[in-house]
Length: 462
Image 1: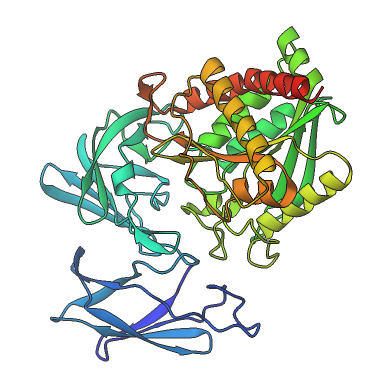
Image 2: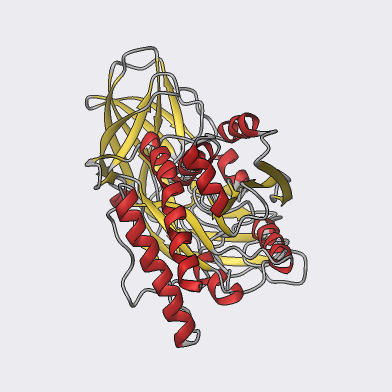
């Protein structure tokens, strides 16, 4: 969400609005804008100063007026640093470039000169016309997770740099307060791309679709549109009458490209046309929603869709078509598929974090149904360990994440579903950085995992 407003320094008043997009409900549809919670940063020059002492809000219609309580004659800048979950972090991000201890450039998100693409906590940017040895400061990365203020900085151990935007190499990072990340790089050419993870762009998805379009084992079906009317497609790889079905979703959170790379590896492996690929597709087909949050990817966002909704929440209830059309599209496709007798047997939702585990939730359901589900997840984890580099394991027996797609699809539709985090820093099973190529390889290996999973699943049912 973009919050625009006016600043009256003399009266120390900030007016944000009109708030045309929803905060927690439909503005103008009878719902009341909820009480904003957060704090404001003040700046002096281009340096972030102390946090304002407090905010008092006066809500009127679709505007939110804030009285700034501050100490000292500081100027007002940046905007809200943290709000509740439905808005997310909207602080204006900065990239600060240092040559040793000397500041040589400052690029703000909307007025970038040295940096062309936006870096919002996990995007990528292009640095031009700078010195060869640089210390790059990224931030501030104040964040919101499950309605609580948080910071992603402790989890970010690695970034990636590239001279051409195609070939990337890992660079270790270190925290730089407040809520900033620092990395030191050497420029070998006139420009350098910097990214939290190797980007997978919408153009990369379009390239994949162009490569596989027209294949007799591929079907691409539009299932809906995003908030900003980008088309959402469901890809089917394999025969529609295959005995078993896998559903995969990737990129519900825009900053997390690992699932996209894994999907590409899986799809290309299944279409290789060798004997193994034919055996795999005799046993199962794969349905893929490859980029659930296209708007967020296009705009360099971190977690939410363009109406402030986390697409990995609220799956314990029917999706709101206005606030989360992306989830509504998937839900409607799923219900039609189930009604046609083609319920997915397994669902995986790919994400990135610093842990890399399978998130196996335990909703309220009959003991027999829960036991059967946990047995399936145990089988999946064992096969991942046998056939891939996966070693991170799964969540504890007390873990539950209500509203996540893993729990929601299990509880509402009886689908064995889980959230699969891919470690964004380090792959322990390979003792190497988490690169795009390693995720592609992981996707290729999943073809064997699914073959073994459904072989065991079929034998158990006989």
